Length: 122
Image (cartoon, rainbow, N blue to C red; front, side, top):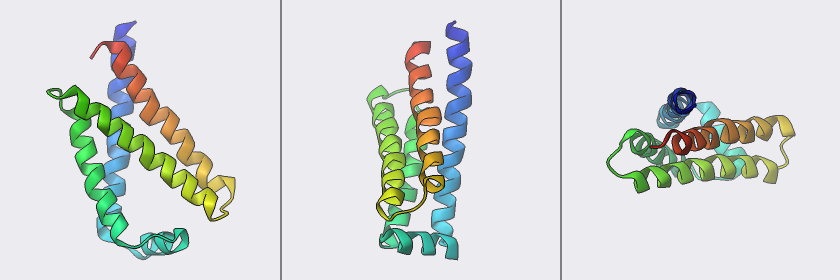
């Protein structure tokens, strides 16, 4: 059974990492879509750059094995990133189609990866 959790951990963590790195890349690009989204949510543009840096550092922390507490903090950071994004869309009155996928990804990727990490015996 531990092998299944190990496979699940690597798949979910790779997907989570790819999503966070893709998001960070998009934030650094600062395209019109990102600018419009931040204006819609009421956040200043510097938040995009700050979150992008934190996402990159979080991905590095997920894959390192020397400091397990740092990995725990990365999972917490990603959890709050997804949670904050979802709540932000709810707060501005967006329809469920804007925030439900965020919460689904939070549960599947962040919590799924974390649970598999713990079950595989890291």
